[in-house]
Image (cartoon, rainbow, N blue to C red; front, top):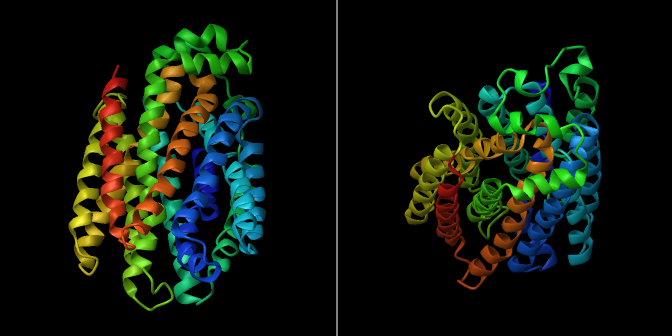
Length: 408
């Protein structure tokens, strides 16, 4: 079930993280400003955030099998609609709808994993899940570069070719995945008798079965540690997408159709993210005894240090830049597996999807504010694309400071 969920999510970012490679082409062909294109990213993020808030709860009701498969098909179709856009409205509306479709996957998939894995192994399980998301970023970056640099196609094909992989992932998942061990005939003992149950799960065991959607949401918002964690991941995700969206623009530069091989350096970022997510999930279980906050704090402080360092490295120093970019991604995304594991740890397994939906709402609501801000700062400073790195570093520092309050 873990591998099936990982396989499906491996292709999801081809539907939303390719936009950074399209921005230079859209800017040149349609004359849309970088600030406005930042708002385009914000539109997707905010629709994704609202979708997480809704679809997280639906994931607890309907399960990941239907939600993830449907999201993959709908997102693929909407990316094709975006590819025919001719202006702000014809780009923004389908791109925002795509954000909602993309939100149908993560929280329901997390609920499925929490159904199949106990408390003391969830850090590792979520680490592998977030590793798949990180590799999805690698796939999104690689396929976008193939479209531009190898196939020599325009920006519109970035929204057409990579997303076809989502159809494969979604269809495969529908036939393989099962939402709970009971669906395959396994016996699971509820409540405190279940192996590897967190204290929160024991406390909630007697009430979760009868909870309504409203009661699940209320339980999430009453948990102040979880809400602080949700705010912290908002700044972490602002840093993450600051890198994912604007690093390709930084390396592509004005000559986005040119043969400059430095654009391939950008792949070091998602590779680092993927490995960081898997490693930190294992560390939180093996070294910190399933305590998530120490891993989050360390990752955020280190990510800030490497982001500020990246600003000082000349773009031409590609070897040093690639190494620093790798570790920037490693630490900025390394925190996520620990963030997601907080949901079943603090709220109980049967509220996992609702909790992660709320957490992801904050993650993308704040990331949406960051995108137009970064675009505005770059545009008003003579297109100094490197300014993205100190902005990312600042967001990481804020996330690290907030995470000090979620220790338990």
